[in-house]
Image (cartoon, rainbow, N blue to C red; front, side):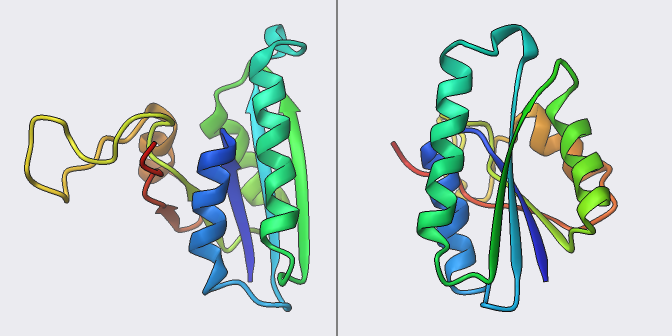
Length: 139
């Protein structure tokens, strides 16, 4: 199985790694991609993305192959992740809801009401592989 994970922060990458902990095996590949704006290539967004990528190989040590990639582009992250999913032959795409937002609406007691960010929403609507939205970590 080939998993593709969209990384936005150390916390979201850790949540995706937790999800994969019981699923990915030594026969699997995990590709972790962080997308940052080309105009902020030296800024804090890039540093956060690189730290997010550094988490994956450590947390996924039991997985057969872990690849990480930092994409500096002004393209929409959903478009980049779709392209990478096709290019690597991903079987499943993993993302978290909007980074930093709770996964449950603040004005609702309904724990099934999630707040998807624009990237997760776009991927769920139109991606050539199944998309799993991993619950965001509670910070």
